[in-house]
Image (cartoon, rainbow, N blue to C red; front, side, top):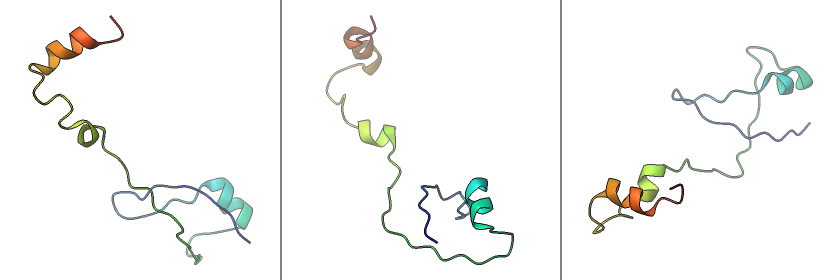
Length: 71
């Protein structure tokens, strides 16, 4: 049987199979499952993505207050 789910790897490298899927497939503790990885989505960091955007713009807080669309 083939089932597709998206999940995260926890800090200990584990994958949690949702309860509904475990029940549907009758998976119990100590059962062995075969995992096929087709794609990996790397987690993106907001701070890393934005790094350098305000470079040379002066005080970032001032700029955000001045340019904010919420004002």
